[in-house]
Amino acid sequence: MTPTQSTPSNGSHERINLNIRKIVLAGILGGILAGGSPMALAAEPEAPLDVFAFPSIQHMVLIEGGGYFPILNNMGNDLYAVFRTGGGHLGRGGALVITHSLPDTARWSPRITVVDGPEDDRNPAVGFGKNNRIIVGYHEQGSYTPEGKYQPSLNKALCKVTLSDDLGNTWSTPQPLGIAGLETCSPYGRIISLPDGTLLMNVYGPYTDTVPGMEAVDKNQGDYAYLVRSTDNGQTWKDPSLILAAHNETALLRLSDGRLLAVSRGSTNQQRLDYTLSLDEGRTWSEPLRLTGPSQHPADLIPLSNGWILMLFGDRSGSEHTIKGIISRDHALSWDVDHTLILSRPVKGDFGYPSGVLLPNGNLAYMYYWAGPAKDAYDYSHARGYVIQFKESDLIAAYEEWLGE
Image (tube, rainbow, N blue to C red; front, side):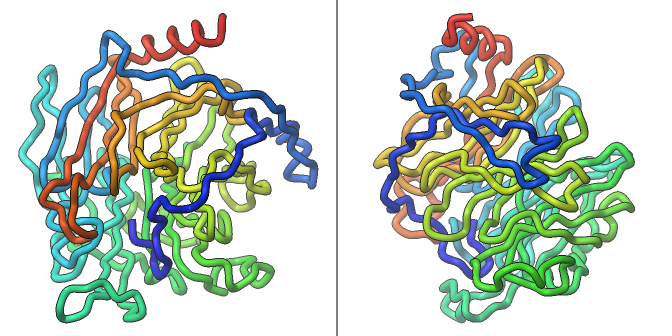
């Protein structure tokens, strides 16, 4: 995605040596939020586990000529995908569309336009609210010259929201986010719900002193990752709080014990993933801990049926790029970076942004994009959006065997 005014990583940052292999957050309930320190264990990484060896693997091209920045949700065993078409990584022609899988088939519904205005509509955040309402937050980016070249100094952007009450067939007139200081922010990721129905959405953008507590934060840290809330099923948004400074695209997950987990992409030099936890529904957060190396981003989080958490991310750190995954088996207290999953075939160039869910039928499904041999950031003629599925039981069995259990 295009950060609000920052330059996205191009994967050229120097790789660093990951000496810390297993990250352990100890005593979160009584330690780190009160000023305690994380612990780490060192070990050598093992060769990754390739899910394409699973007998249940299914790999399909959902769209050609698009598929950027997908967000995958589900209603039962039906998958709902929102993604970008009509433009490449950049381009004023960008639009957002929705499609859903058809029951018991490999087919998908015709794509329906969510939004296609005169500016560049991009960077969706998507979730389901009450009564199966679909909420889409997005970035209306108008910072283009008359010749169609992206020029961030124009600073012409808006954060907007649109709603559907008929499973994506029709959409409301988009409305601005409506939070002072966050007008130009970009949304990201899956919109999640609290038990009381409150919706939480990540938006990121520049520093603003209108968010509580920002007076204590340095004003020159690139992007800032915020959390915004809706108590009326996505109709209006309010009550912002800061997740992390110097970060942007942030995946959210509510854990079974009520904690919130956030995995966030750094907006400064390394463009790595860090994670943080909240005990108070996102009002305050622990000090971030590093999860990945440079140019390994952004993340999505999938809770598995046995209590594990699977984190997906795009690895752009080498000459070939892949979707990878790591697992936490203790509710985000630690992440086993020794045992990495390979979740896509290797490609070169612009790609990534995995988004996935666990279906009631036991399938793990995720979507990501690849721009193909694009001539520039505006070229989407070779772009593809891929959907991969396999049985969760295949993953758990292979992982446990891998660990010798």
